[in-house]
Structure formats: structure tokens, C-alpha cells
Image 1: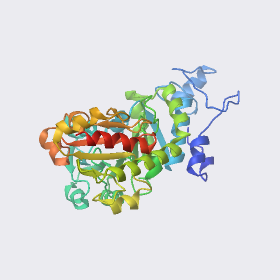
Image 2 (image 1 turned 180 degrees about the horizontal axis):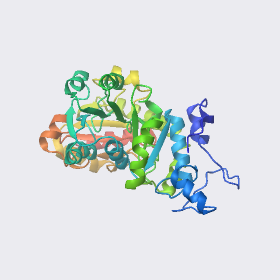
Image 3 (image 1 turned 45 degrees about the horizontal axis):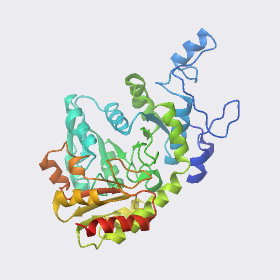
Image 4 (image 1 turned 90 degrees about the vertical axis):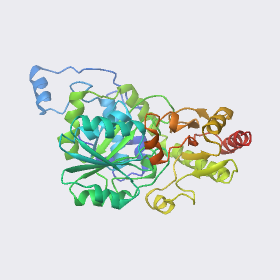
Length: 397
């Protein structure tokens, strides 16, 4: 089931409408939805050949499915990867990418600024299986180099990181990893495949929660892992086949439909986030505003270098601590309180009590998740209405 590269020279918007498409005998324009768990073989010999890998057909939807494969191939075309596998959720993608490759006695280095569930995988789950882990300041390239051990096998990071939007120099970290024969795995959710290309910057594996911007409408869960053909063949494919975090074909079909509008939506998300960040940056009730393409971001130059847009996420530090942060959320009329992101609707969350609540106070303080921090995922509403909504809420504090 290798990727058909006829779309190789198409531009991104064309790939996202046509990439990977396979039509049935009925010639449908919208990709077919194959809601099936199993497949029928022409004869016993064909069944044997499928399980031996000598026949390229389908066996069981836990292993592969025609609709899911179209989604994978479309993402392959967009990302510039050799192959990919879809998963049931973004966290199953992260977990599978790490566990399929790492074994007892191996060492992982990860940036300490991670989504709360990713911190759990790195800090709690992997060590239970004898995998050593080290958390470092991801923005300090020397810290990555200093953490390397003889048994270091992989590096893992998010950039921009959740929730403070730290920007990590992917190319520099990739060079360090490769100098020590380790792989670099990048969770590219915040940047999306439209704004940042980790593989072109030297990453070996790219991971997405398709639940976020790829779906973009709060409808379904999904994840995907992309990388080199040999790595997926040797490590990921069989791990997923045997452990079973398979994407639903229905979710794959929804994600295919969403990919058709991804460039248009990301352009609108970025425009809204840039306008909202500019409008709020000097508000007297804010202690700090963080946005990758805002000139006050500490890695502004790096963000401009490795991203083509600032993304849809903004972080705010509110004067007045938790009480003021809660009051702001409760005063908003358009933005919804939700821990999701990448949605058509503008969403706001308080990381210290939601996405990062399981971390100790010391761990939250180390990565800057204070009681005054709020994370905004800017949606597709009119930016002027969002600006009015946030200003009226801030003015009431």
C-alpha cells in the first residue's frame, strides 16, 4: 500500500483536495466511506497471500482500511513524508511513535514544555518499562547536547510548545540528535502542516493530533504519525497492527473532507490571531501576551525563520492571578471555555486547572504555567467581534 506520488508536484491546496484519492467502480467525486471491519477473499490462496504480505489487499480494518489509507496518503502528500499511519487519537499517535521504537535500556530526551498527557507518557509511562527519560529546556540547544547519553535513542519535542508557545530550533536539535545517531520526533500540532515542515528542518518523525486543526470543527478524534518508509515498516506498522489503536473509517472520511479546506481555515485562523494579539498586547489588564509572530516573543526571529505564520494560539498572563483569569473566561460572550484547540470556534482554557493540572506546582512553575495564564485558540469568527469580546471582558476585571 505504498503512496501514489502522482501529486508530488502539486501545490498544497491541490494536494489537499485531490491527493491520495482512489475511486471505486462507481466513480464518486467524494471519497467513498468504507465502514467495514473485515474483507472477503476470492479464495483461500488469496487469504494466505494477504497474511504473508504477498498480496497488497486488505485484511482487517484494525490493520488498514481503504478510506483511512486515502487520508494517510493525502497527509503524506502534504507533509512530504515517505509513509504514514493514522491512529484513533493524537495521544495514541504520540504513544505509539515512542513505544514502537524505544525499549528497556534506551534513553529519551524531551523538551520539558509539553502537553500534560505527553509529560505523563515521558515522565511516568516510559520509565515503567525501563526506558530512561530526561526533560530539558527545549529552547537551549546546549541542554539537548549535554543530556545525551550512550544509550540515547530519540529526542521528542513540540514547537510551538503547549501552552506558552515556546519555539524550539528544530534544525539545531535535529543536528544534535543525528550526530549521536538518535531520531528526532516532532509534535507539530500547534504549527499545523501548513505553517511548519519539520521533515524539511531535519526531523525524522512528525506527529499530529488530527483532532485539532486537521478536523478543525470539533467533530472527531484522530492522530497520524509520518516518517520514512523503512522506520514505519520496521517499527510502527506492526506495533499498531498488534496493539490496535486504529482510526475509525468514519473519522478518516471526516478528516478527508476537512483537509480540503485546511489551507483556507489556517489562513483565517492566523489572520484572526494576529489581529487579536495586536489589539490586546497593550491592554492594561494584561501582564504579558505571547504570540510567536508578535515582536515581543522571545524567539520571534526563530519563529519567523522556521514557520510561515504565527498560528492560531495565543497565551495571556492576566493581572490578578487565578481569580482574574477565571473572571475573564466567565465574561466572554463569543469565546467558549474548552480545553480543545484548532476549532472553528474560539476557545479559551486555564492550563493550570485543565491541560496541565496533573503536574506538580513545581513542574508547572518550571515551564511557566502560572495561575494567571490563559491559552486562546482563535477560531474563524470575525476578528473585530473577537477583539470587542475580549476587550469588554478585560475591561470588567
